[in-house]
Amino acid sequence: TWLLNTTVGVAQLNPLADIKIFPNPTTEQIRWNTQEPLSSVELRTLDNKLVQYAADPGTGIMKLEDTAEGNYLLVVRSESGHVATEQIVVR
Image (cartoon, rainbow, N blue to C red; front, side, top):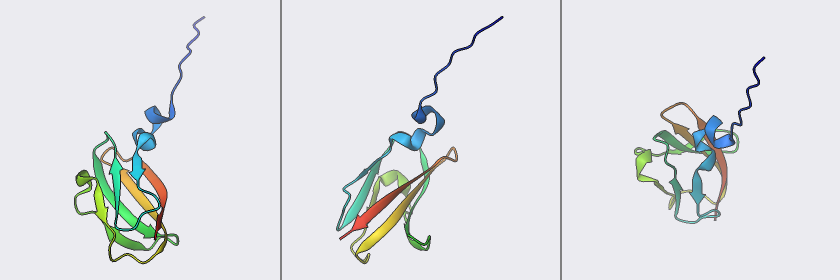
C-alpha cells in the first residue's frame, strides 16, 4: 500500500494567480507584473464588450487616457492558456 501526499498551491494550478495589477483605482494607465509570458491583455466592460487590447502585453502597461470613468474587467491570458480577470476602476 502506497500513500501519496501532495499539496498543490493556487499558483501551481494557475501561474497567473500571483499577477500584480496596479494602480487600482487608476486614472491614466494600468500596469501588470507577472513572470508568466502573456499572449493578450484586454480591457472589457462589465458586460464583456472589448474596450481596448494591449498590442504588446509584454510591456506591462496599458494607457487609459481616453477611457471613460467606470468599472472594467482586465482580462489577462498567458501563453500557456491560463486566464486571470481583475476588476479595474477608472476615475
